[in-house]
Amino acid sequence: MKGFIQGSHFKDEDSLDESSYVVQHFSANNFYPDKERIKIEKHFEKVLDVTDKFNRQSVSYQLSKKDLIHSWLKYKEGFSADLVNIFLKEMGAKPDDLIMDPFMGSGTTALVCQMNGINSIGYDIMPISTVSINAKSNVLNYDVTSLSKIRNALAGLSVPHNYKKDTPVITITESAYPDQNSKFFSYIQEWIGKFNFSDIEKNLLTLCVVNSLERCSFTRKDGQYLGWDYRSQKVIDANASRVARGKKPFPIKVVRDPICDGKATVLEEFDHVISDISIIQESFKDNTGATIDYKQSSVLYELPKLPDNILKGAITSPPYCNRYDYTRTYALELVYLGLREKTIRDLRQSLLSCTVESKSKANELEAFYSSIGQKDRYDYILKKIQSNGAFQEVMGALEKRMANGDLNNNGVVRMVDGYFTELAFIYAELFRVCKPGAYVVFVNDNVRYGGEVIPVDFLSSSFAEQFGFETKEVYCLKQQKGNSSQQMAKFGRVALRKSITVWVKP
Image (cartoon, rainbow, N blue to C red; front, side, top):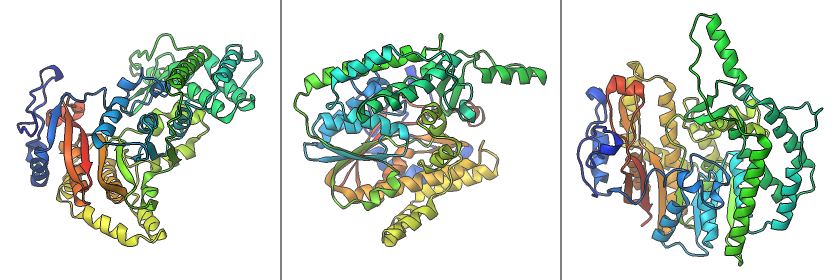
């Protein structure tokens, strides 16, 4: 049903009208002009494909959580290996080609490429990505006999009765673990450091610990924040304070029951990875020889340094423009890996602008491009961004909504401005480094703030076309998104697309 255009009314998922995927009114109550958004909506209608080819599991971690190797890190923001395989085939990627993932996350794109004998390159600033990618990329290099010995040593590991240290915490992770688990995670970290393992074995075991932390804690990743179990000391203290002030305690919330045991969970994880490694090594007796060129860094400052025309394609999912703060939701993992309050705050600012705390990177980008002798290119990209009518309309609408008191946080305006500006720089650089015929695939969600719909998929595609790409297809999932309860109460419901944009360099 490519190109079908009808209303934008939200319905329950089971009874969605399949014609309701093109927005007809972007501004609730006609508060702000939306002719530029309607213009790009009509422009990209011809390539919109509402499809069964992908679903919510395809564009999330769900399909990968049982897959060999891809389940080694429960990275909720990831996408499936199946999705990567589909687009590698569609773009005709072959050995000796180079594929990029600008936001590598848990490394799904890179690992699928490696198993297909295809070289990859990519970046991520999150330390958990580094641990995950290093562990997975060495899957053919592990000695299973040695890993089995480590497993036996781990099974016999016990925390001494007189051990006093606890797992380090920062403010938002304080009292995250039962006492037994807190001491175990501190002790195993010391044990890994002292034991006579190889570096890749230490990293693999560290990943198993990192992947166990949440299940052994009183927390759960819950949208923008960590959700807390009622049994945690944090909630107990907060409820005592509320009752003392004459307020009702927080509702009882159970994140899991029981809270998992630290040692048993890490051992289970390690058994799982050893099993996966054995199966994969048996299936790939001849090393594919494919390389993964990964760097823990921001793609904003790495892409401009690459030469022209080197990529066969790119497959990625950037952080969404949804206010989710990965430094908070992954706080347990970051703290375990040695980050503390200030380092995490700095990391938050280095992320693609996707939280209300994000500050503008415009001055940093200008200084960076100047430092590499590319100030003219910076000016060219910025001029293109400023000439995008739909983007300027979005920013004008949000600024007026802010003045009208319609935004629940005024930082949304700065966040959206930074988000699309930074992505546009990435789109421009991707066009330069892609070979003719290269595919660029982005998974993303549309959003709505203060009654203003922001068509992330079509707006991104309009930027991509400004820099020279052609939009081949915008796959739209049948399962549309809803809105926050606050927006629905004030502005009504509007269905939001979850899309996969596919661009081609002519």
